[in-house]
Amino acid sequence: MPTATLNGIVLAEADEADVLHIEGNVYFPPSSVNTDLLAESPTPYTCPWKGECQYFSVKDGDTLLQDRAWSYPHPYPTAFDRVGKDFSNYVAFWKEVKVS
Image 1 (cartoon, rainbow, N blue to C red):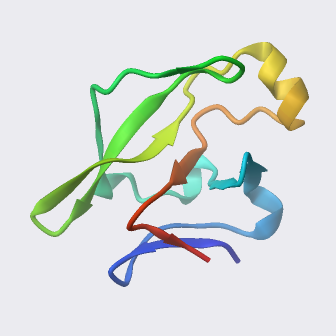
Image 2: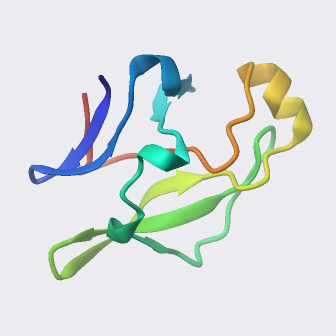
């Protein structure tokens, strides 16, 4: 079962059948993510094939780790064909967040 953790705190956990693997990253379905530990970031980014990205900072105690998670709230419809599924609002993590 894929799990995203930061210093022993579970940020997301889902069955393998429910996660998506896109460009080497594990994307967790929105219902599996502890959104209390995420804060929307104003950092702008648009992927050429996925669309406009929403970055999140991850709460680590009293510290915010800037832009350590992201999702695509409204991916381009053509991206669904490429991924094979609607991945709207799925969340991926990087850097200090361990995904195993």
